[in-house]
Length: 422
Image (cartoon, rainbow, N blue to C red; front, side, top):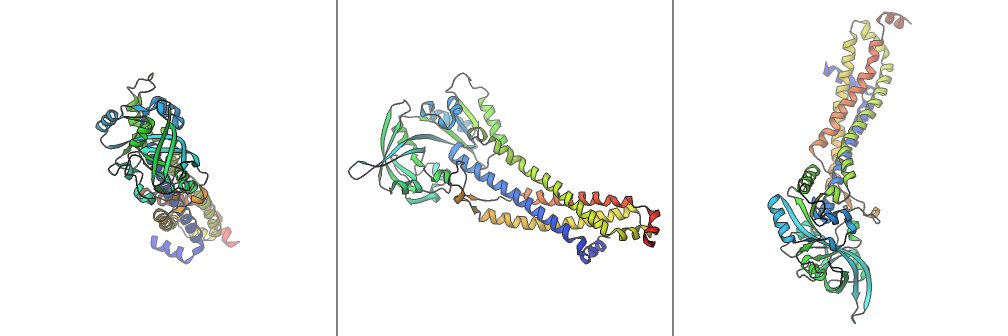
């Protein structure tokens, strides 16, 4: 029976070509969109975790409330002991200390006079050769010129910022800032190299300094603004991060504004709404696809039924039951849906594979961006990418054929002779 229907579809392409192309295009777009959203989400969450908030962040309650505008006066104290406790309690999470600082960066000339000045925002971490920040921030592959810091008073600047200031590795820089206690700080650093992360927000103007050097400059011995934790798997698990934060904060003293507080990435980075959208996007896309394709294929089935009005009448007149005719229409829809879904999945995976391996550079559109995300958009193919388009493609074809095929039961056998004689 199936082979007979397949031959009929091949010989009469008007019955199969339009539905097949409709299914193939819809499935390919669904597969591509699912892989694209997963890739973009991974890029945003990974970049945000490495540079901004970690998968989980431990900071003081006051700093957590103030957010990015908080001063170093709200920093964590006795960080060494706190980090040891966290590493013991959460051995499968990598912890790193960070200090965020701001101030005025002064570039002196050969006579020691100010040649250029610019407001600066920077991050301090363990940039020593044995520190994990080199791996976490991927400094080896991001280095544009010079070398990575080897001493506490050596810093890195983003390549674009260094070009604007007209400085090069080996030049002296002066940071005018304030200490954790509120007094003025004037510290000299040496530019060891420049970096380009491929993230427009960071490449516009970023200063990376060694933790030891900034601690000495800002009077923050054994203090840090935050402790970032990253899961050993490398991927962000929103549900797990939320559970850890809730458990950690359960016994905290709410009245003490300096008590350590843990936040998940969704809270510390302000990406909660985006994470919810990302999680719901795939299901929403599939639902819209099934609805839209069902309507299109329903209309296609209705037009096909009108064109095949005589054929169906003859089949009923020679004794074929309405149920058998209806089931044959569903079988045809199964064949069309199977081939169209398979073809669409292959096409969608092909485009997704290109985006995954090569990517699409949108750096030109990110000049004024504030979100921390990679300039190169990439997709991510998963097992669900094979299912998210294929099964809905079959479902939409079946729904469309099932609705349009109901017209078979409206045919009155008693009227067939009159129709044919007319």
